[in-house]
Image (cartoon, rainbow, N blue to C red; front, top):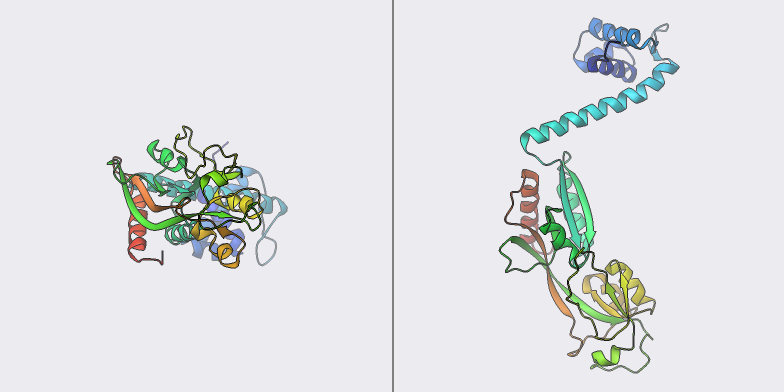
Length: 300
C-alpha cells in the first residue's frame, strides 16, 4: 500500500478544522484544487470516506471524526520531532536538568525558574529535589546541569552564584519539653528527646552529621516541610530553616531554643554548576538569568 503523505494529512486536518476546502487552502497557503486532491488521495489510500460533501459545507463522517483525532496527534508529534531535530542541529538543549536541594527557599526558586522557562518553550525542565549530599552528588556524576544548594567555595571544579543566607534554628513545639527551659539549654538536656533529621538522598552518604546530638534517638524526614510537621505535632525537635517557620515562630506555634550551646547554623544557598564541563546555550542563559536575579537583591 502507498505510504501516507504528511501533506495529505495536513490538508485533511485543515479542511476539518476550517470547515471548507477554500478556507483550508487559504490557511495552508495552497491552491483549492491541491487541497481537494490531497484529501481525495488520502481517502482513496485509506479506503475511507472522511468528509461528507453532500451539503454546502463539508462535514466529518463518523470515520473522519475518529481518524481526525489520531491524525492531529500524529501531526503534533511530527512537529515536536522537527523542533527536536532543529534543537539538536543548533546545539540547543532539549532538556535542562535542575536539582533543588533541601537548603533552599523553594517558593522563591520555583518563581525564578518559572520566569525563565516561560520564555524557553523549546527546552523542557527536568526538576528534581534532593537532600543533604544528594544535590552535589547528582552534579558531580553529571546527572544535573545546575543545582541549588550549598557547596564548598574552595572546590576548583565548581562555579557558584551566592543567592542568600539561610539560618537554621533549633525549635520545639509548645509543651514538648518536660522541664522549664531557660536561655541555656544544653545538648545533653536534649539527648532524651527524639531529634528530627533530613534523610540524605546521596547514594554514598557522608558521615558528617548536621546538628546531631550524640546518643539521641533520631527520626528522619524526606524534606523540611515533613520535618516541620513532625516537630509541630510534638513528635520530635530539630533545626529548621528560618524562611520556612517565620509565621510559626511569630505566633508561637513553634518555639526557638537557640542559645550559645545550641547556636543553630547559617548556610549560603547558591546556584552551583561544574566549571570543568561545557554548558549549552540554554544552560548558559539560565546561569545569566540567575546571576541577574542575584544581583537584584531580595527580589529574585
